[in-house]
Image (cartoon, rainbow, N blue to C red):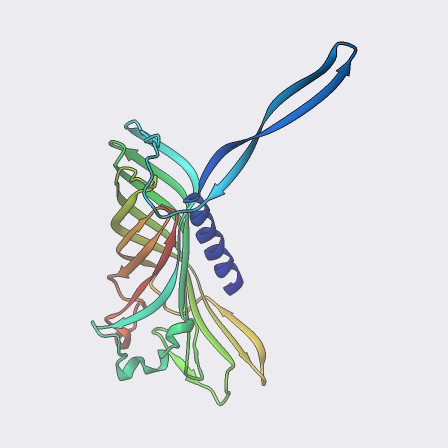
Length: 280
């Protein structure tokens, strides 16, 4: 998963970088002089040939370049897509605080190793003009927390329950997979002198639980996987924001309902994620 995430980031940022390069066609001239000796004297023929070369350059300076403004007519659209690729950090908010309460201490996680990753695959929208559009989309969203404690969340319990293990786990990951369903209100500016736009997208977001997953790696038990039955919310809802320039920006997603169902000790424990996004 880490390799996939970093590969997608590198591809997205490389594409966005090269999209800002300027390509100029230039011509060079080659002069060929031919001398012919005849009975009447010496004749010199001069032939000038033009060779076309393609020159690539990158500059942040303003240039008097004319770009064709993309114009979109109002109307409906339905299309498959691969966009809004989010890669960032996952965070728990415990009743408004980033510090976990004693009841939730067993979920302490390593911040730099807890991540959120997602993307959209389908889009249905209505464009009002070249700058404003409303669309609903569907995709997938993965959230993973790298737990610090040597605990195991138990499956198929009345409420979220865990066991404290006498094992020093090399890796203890608690993750969830959701089908994500955002409703987006999208605005973009006109092209600037560099031919790029500013983008702002915001709206409500919904999620349908696909799977919960615990992965543990230890010397004693090797690599273990446990799926489903962790009292995760079957439906989640919240809001999101994306903003950026060109094809790169940042995102933030906050889910207003509790992360777990039927678990009084985890009441008020919510999910928040933020990071970089590629593709608007």
